[in-house]
Image (cartoon, rainbow, N blue to C red):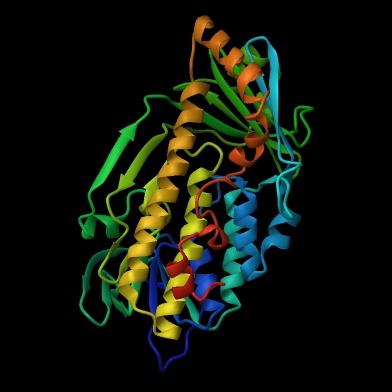
Length: 402
């Protein structure tokens, strides 16, 4: 497959940073670096971007990061602002997670199909003359020395001062670095599909936790909704009707996909001049978009760190160590929270469903804990969810932060 270049860099200078993977995290990192005039080469193995909607939840911390490249307003204009999440149990509504009172300019979680996020990031990348995107390039080998990293593919080799792997949960770069990983399968399965029509649910998210399994529903732009049901296979409209009483028209279903949530943690995120970011660095339950938003925070940290090294002459090793420590801790926190929430949500059987209703109704959505539910769902309380939340003074000084 012949590599395709979508943007040309200056012909007299090679890339300073090579990014393997042109998904949301890789493209955001490219935009953040290109904004600083850093020469970036993005290598993406697919010729076309994915068209089906994957992750859809964009949290307030991510919108804060997107503002750094001027994309927050464009994202908000294309998405749906979810200001409340209605949680239903076996016996009806058990509570509401409201985002209306959370701090910051975005008191909501934005629902936006990943394809649109990619479209906007690609357009932003095209604005920067120092960013080059090559499609149809699959990295198969890598070598690095004291001065740079060489990435090899069937179409040739590419060299840069540093490399960042954003090539997904099956990361080839992670394998080449022989990074030790710890994997866990949660043993539950889901079917996901998008439907035309909002089913009368408006712009709220709705979570239904029943004795027969979970059903989750999120609004999408253009009066569409995503439905996710806990099941191995079968008809989404049938499961939704049986568990919630809501009638979905099968003729208005647009797609259907199956997935089984799992977790993967890396014992390190850096080696030499190479970083891991996004799903290459951590895999967690995709429900709620925790993984993608954690990856966006990886990109923000990595961009500021590489800028400090390449433009201000900061020592690379201490910053790489800080990236490894801070981003692994943030990812582990997000993954654990996702696992806890999902673990309780997939309880089946009447006894467990009744216990879950009791916990939600009288502990989660009432009392002192209730004020933390909105920020918890919106990922505002994840450590280092943005650079502003990085507390290490030495690291902040090295990154040029106040």
